[in-house]
Image (tube, rainbow, N blue to C red):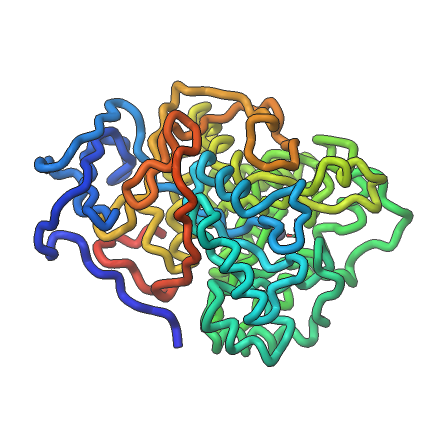
Length: 454
Ligand code: NCD
Ligand code: ZN
């Protein structure tokens, strides 16, 4: 059965409990930035918003902006199996915390991959006591007899329709409908890496990101998405890293959840000429990138996710065709977009829906909105505090970023359950992040959520 338990209401109908703290600042509520007070109870939940409450210590943020912390539903933290020079659970989750991400969805393509209950338990044990933020663990459903047990213990499934890092082979597209039917009955969220390897062009060894785009063209994404669109109604489907405006249109018209990444939104196949910007699916030519960004700005892309996929710098320096695919991004995703908001190229409302509210809802988590009953996972942002991305200051040991030198606004404070885990832009918490699973079905709304946030 679904792990669908209704949230305890901590809103107006609950007796007034003791408050831990009251935050005062500006927040995006009712379609505008307005001054508010957010009362946080002793369990770290938001008790009330907008009412003047006394009886607890106050933290005054004046003109600074209080936002919900973000959910990044697509990261690769490289445990178990490493390489630890690329990332670990402590480093990746510390980067998430500093970048304003309070929950990460950790993918199963590790060494070994998470295809059994034992492997899932092993990964959960690695999170305990070592993670700066909460972690939802995906499993890969490639071992049929393990699926039922995994569905009761994992946070989601990830299906790879093409080979990529750690994934040597993928199911035949003909097997996909049956797999989707079974996964629908298991009721966990299902994210899909949608590229059809039969559409890859078998040309000479690719030497640049331009070649890589020709080798794994957009029509390979289209063909894989074709195989998904007639999946069962009950499937909680999400298509990872969509790269073209055409696919945005098609998935939107079918009501399927999907994400775009900061690298596909901001970089093209000419942003670099070595294997550092080799990624699956590939970066697309500039006109396609510009169309994707325009669709994002218009609010047509439901979810922003980083596909944080760090590799050791020395491996990214290998000859292009042998180098691994993937770029880091969990720590820079929100700061880059906050800088776009400041530059008036992106509406704050769009960022809040795509980075905070919708990914949390897709994963069934009571976070991502400033509303009573939600966990007080919150950020404080000073839009005057501009910075540049500098890889040497990021937490990933991989040591580089495709966004080096880009303008960014890092949150000043990050609260997890009402407790500061980032202060002055530095991680000050202890590793209290835990493994979470969906708490309510996609269609359900957490208690105290009056409006449907589209
Ligand atoms: C990812 C990785 O390195 O784990 N690489 C990538 O190019 N995106 C795997 C994946 O998500 O395809
Ligand atoms: Zn990925």
